[in-house]
Length: 336
Ligand SMILES: Cc1cc2nc3c(=O)[nH]c(=O)nc-3n(C[C@H](O)[C@H](O)[C@H](O)COP(=O)(O)OP(=O)(O)OC[C@H]3O[C@@H](n4cnc5c(N)ncnc54)[C@H](O)[C@@H]3O)c2cc1C
Image (tube, rainbow, N blue to C red; front, side, top):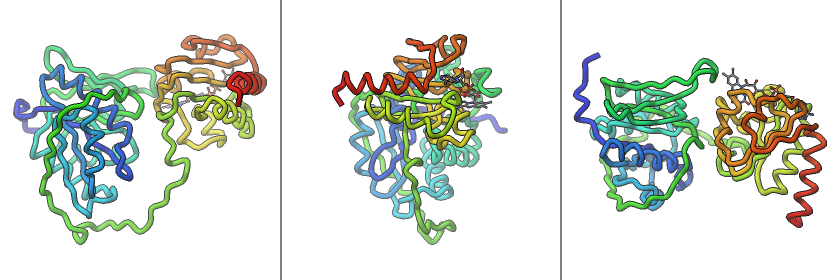
């Protein structure tokens, strides 16, 4: 590979994923993290997106600290399709040469980042869980779990730009940091006739839409819940507390819940105010998705279960008995 002149590349770019005129939370989380990275690199945070009529996104993007917002608007880019989005975004990046490009590791982001990185001949670190700047080399250090979550690997890209990474929703916090923002509209042109793939129908199930990261309270259950019907106990407590319920991968594999409710390395990453783990052993891959929760309450029959090592409060007992008692008690206390 021909060595690039990496000094031509500047600024930290964040892809703004959007749905029905709203910015996806992960993009706001990445803008906040990008601010820290840009401080270390003495450069600016820029946002970028494509779509049709993206004006409603502008205020929110400015509130989270972007200095510039690069936009390609075109009716042919209204809905996500890999090739036209890949081509328009590769064009934006090649033209403006950002040093760092961050994209949310959502279904859309994972598809997009891979194809854009291929076009740009850039490296891509997928599913990053930590981002730092090396104080000496100024390279972006991208850390992610490897070997089934048993090791953390830090990856960097010394000779090529941009340094690209997808980051899972919920890893960083979205913190407002308003900034005066310049809108830069690019005239990249594409017509519907040039796009081979056509969207015939869009189908979205209720579960597909679930974003566990929105909830302050999560009541999660694992294999120790015993059978599918018992998951109602999680839902009952979650409803009383104003939260939602989630599961471990074992529960998904047993067919007791949909994968969108899974927390962990191959599920969603969450940091709610309260995470209640019932009948979950505390495998490292599960902890990867919830260990930064403010308060962790573990309910387990085995007092040696690893989950107790990170729990704020531990209840040694049968979750099938403890959960209904908690629900009843909170119902009384909260007068529901
Ligand atoms: C590459 C890879 C990725 C993975 N990704 C994920 C992931 O994203 N999320 C994830 O969760 N896992 C993931 N796993 C799986 C992970 O290693 C564990 O197998 C899984 O988390 C275990 O789920 P569990 O705690 O529900 O089940 P178990 O480990 O079987 O634990 C069940 C627990 O329930 C307790 N128990 C039993 N009966 C009761 C009762 N009546 N009341 C209370 N407690 C009871 C037991 O003491 C035990 O501690 C991954 C694994 C690999 C290799």
